[in-house]
Amino acid sequence: MGVPHTEVNAILINGKSEDFSYLLKEGDTIKIYSFFTTPKHQEISELQPKIKEKVRFILDVHLGKLASFLRMLGFDTLYSHTFEDAEIADISELENRIVLTRDKGVLMRKKISYGYYVRETNPKKQLIEVLKRFYLFEKITPFQRCLNCNGELEKIDKQLILDKIPEATRKYINNFHRCLNCNQIYWSGSHLQNMQNFINQILLEKINH
Ligand SMILES: [Zn+2]
Image 1 (cartoon, rainbow, N blue to C red):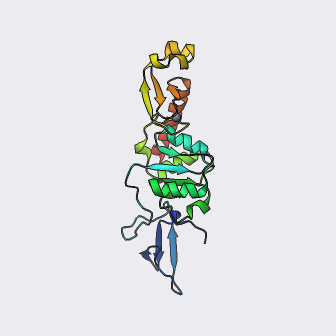
Image 2: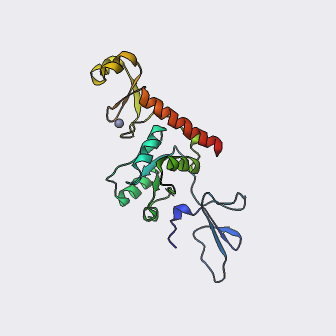
Image 3: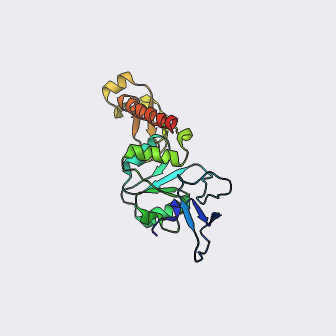
């Protein structure tokens, strides 16, 4: 009926918990639950696989803003505006990455075990939605990843990058980080303060949840 398998978290047939292998019979009563609507009951088995290792994402081409928000919070997030659907499915399978998309067609690919259809359209609301869906509020480690390329950041000695920073910054700022992948330099300043405020707002959502 057009619902991707990644969105079906529980199936009850005539009141009994079943999985995707069940063959329907005439007169069966079927109830299907998403992750958010699954009743918490020990006799209901959840069908979506639990993520055993560190959570990692791959996002489709329409979720660029969400990708940089996830990176800002420290989550390993692949994103490229050139990704084809088949490529996303392949990488997801190979690296156990959760596919985030607003395209149900992508999620219907068999290769994808970990996937999620993002309901919200506003990037900030999308971020909160994803944090809730995958229980990530406790796993936020801000400013560890490059917003541009997903590379990891490392502390760097100011003296080594003097020629790459504006004069005013050189004067007042002492802590610098560099992306190990693309060499982008990051430092605390008004931009970082804005990000910190944003993260504080996100963490408030956890309390409200
Ligand atoms: Zn980078």
